Length: 408
Ligand code: ASP
Image 1: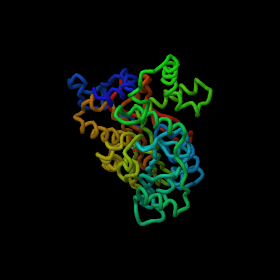
Image 2: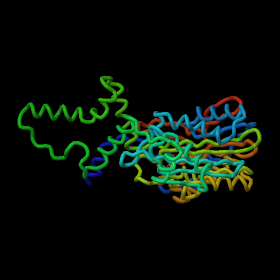
Image 3: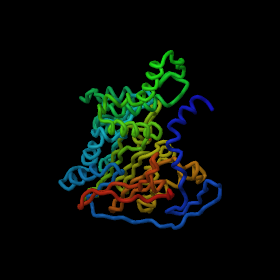
């Protein structure tokens, strides 16, 4: 085994117990089980959810966002203003480590953000990608929509554009995300110079031996010591979290879609993208038609999860097109997810780590959230039902997403 692999194993052992846990599907899919047998899904049911507008749908981290947006719509705000104000809550929240400030950085420890916005009634779009130093990239995307003849501005150009519009260059890294990055960096490879040296000489005295033992104990703690101070429990929790995200970078992002009582629609998607990505990597979120699409005559869709899959099938545009052809939002989302599963020959072993979630609503007030997998599983084996956020006159809440495959 290579040094790289053996060092990775250090963290890898933590997730070995997750297991595959699959089979059974909410809709008809010919799935290939880990043993290679064909397994057909149980039932072909879809739920139809409908509510009187104004309504707002978002990813599972968006309960505060949908609540804020619906409140604004009820007070007469424009749909785009409402969804942007909603996701600004996540963008500014240091605890949401998949969006804006506090988002996990790329492999060089730089936080690069992607965002897109679409305004249905005026049929316009704006987006930024690989943007640095702005905590609310959705606002810069809106500037692209309102103040330029372009749709997408990236990298240094996006930074300069933001500066020109008065967005300060601020740090996006929190102490927690820096710790997670360091943990990832130190455990990534045995071939680089990060982490304790592989070449530790034999101690010359009992004091030297004692010192080394203490250092080994402390080495990983030191990363969290400054932050958590003397609070041992907090330090341990921080390290456990850092190990979890180092090994299994969480998917996140917020997508938020709104329909107002005049039946106008807008949407936004904003993210720090995949943790530890190659600098300059762009996901689905800022790509119109992938992480977001709005057609004011039909409906809107958006996504979170593994962006590469969503880009490959042009997820959001595909869903809106399915809805235009007559499918309800849930069926349209599931059909798009099936395209992803088909890319892997419906092989559940290959699909097991692929996490994609779609959200959609149509002009009639039908709405849905759907995911490839019924649950997420943490490296501790904790199962969590896939959910999406929704708000109407009753306020914001979480609802269970439809899914292609049940994770056992
Ligand atoms: N979709 C985002 C991206 O690929 C990441 C995520 O939602 O977790 O950049």
